[in-house]
Length: 372
Ligand SMILES: Cc1cc2nc3c(=O)[nH]c(=O)nc-3n(C[C@H](O)[C@H](O)[C@H](O)COP(=O)(O)OP(=O)(O)OC[C@H]3O[C@@H](n4cnc5c(N)ncnc54)[C@H](O)[C@@H]3O)c2cc1C
Image 1 (cartoon, rainbow, N blue to C red):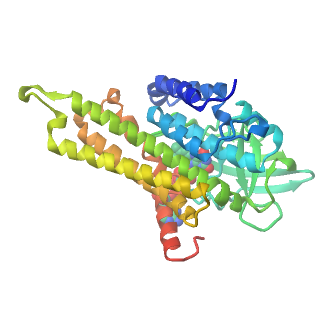
Image 2: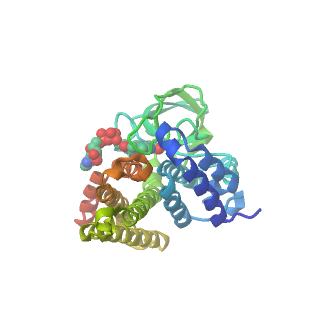
Image 3: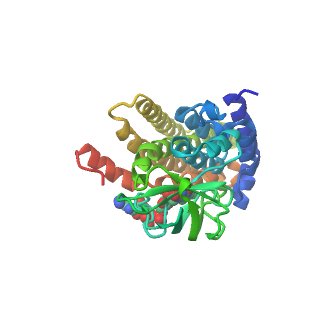
């Protein structure tokens, strides 16, 4: 059956919505949503038609993440990292794995962050040592979304022999020598299965290298950064929309009965809601303009890429904070659906490049200084 984005998204959001509370409460993987993405072809969204994929691009992936994030931030995060990995593999990977992604048989993710260089993902400390026609990887990866569920990791290391900052590899999750860290028990995005993974003499074939030795940094900047920034921003916008809708519903349906007025009759509450709406719409406008800049290779595309993740992450924190205040004590109860968004929204700002780093990069870019 030909791929239909609207019906695939409907199936995934229905599954994500039904499980979202349990995923958060139990900190378990959003299996139902990911299974629906496999079944409906959504995992193959950015895969080329020639390998059996939907042949769509970053814009459609971004709209999908934004829609799914309204129901389940964890499912949106898992798919964000999948499409980041899948985009790298589409450009630099071999055909069999591209076909597996297109068929929905391969869940991808990025394994960049390390306990040594922390959020400075562009500077891996893990090594790749030549061993005949293979390499041996040693690393302490600090966070990998879908660590226990991805089929393989798009993995960064120092180059094996070339100069440059890094090299990328495709490392199967079941490779001998990979050790999983403790299960993720986080503050927000509790279902994203983001665990530490150690590599102790993990042997991978030279053919699993993604791109040239030493060319990892270029792939990170050219392929990963635009995809990651726009998709993480999509998640932030989806979470904001959900928090705003829940706030409007609560404030219009909740009454001070002795006064015969709703919470929305209070001008202060309406002002809060208006400010939330402006923040979401302004962020959405920047996000759509960023997509336009990337698609048309506009000269300001890199500036937009740096701006959009920081702007959306910071806006999301403000909007969910306002939602918690307008929602009063009721917002503290899980059934209001606000406190989950409050927790989920905070992660984007500390995912690398973090908001702090992006502000530094942006300041340098605006002042005409080199970013690194
Ligand atoms: C839910 C979740 C899922 C994740 N999934 C993945 C994944 O799939 N793959 C992956 O590779 N990583 C992943 N990460 C890791 C993420 O991208 C960051 O690397 C990580 O969150 C950084 O945390 P840290 O404690 O190591 O930060 P630190 O580097 O210790 O930073 C601490 C603080 O210092 C600030 N800081 C650091 N450097 C600078 C600087 N140069 N200028 C200004 N401020 C600075 C930071 O902004 C931060 O506020 C995930 C993280 C989270 C929270």
